[in-house]
Length: 115
Image 1 (cartoon, rainbow, N blue to C red):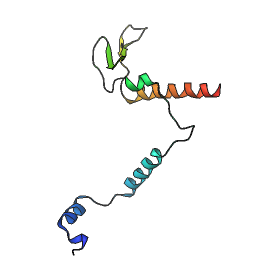
Image 2: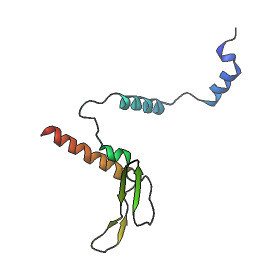
Image 3: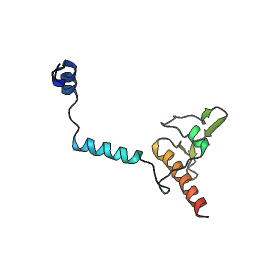
Image 4: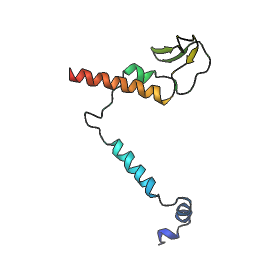
């Protein structure tokens, strides 16, 4: 029989992976609490169509229209326009616009539940 610490693979892994720091342990605790089942106030709702076809993750560039298609569902958007200057202001993309869609749907669901 060998002690676990004497096995070469275990020694190599112990050198490669240090013990987690307090901050890393706190991060793991936060992730575990987020993964716990939410109560009724914390539940989020998203329209099925926006789950299947969401806004772009990155800037689509200088194109006339951006589309995403999933099966029979399609989402098409055109760049916004500043009506004062007439200039295109681009597409909504990235985390914030997608979270705003989620937030708007969540607010609508809250108002629906309150009515």
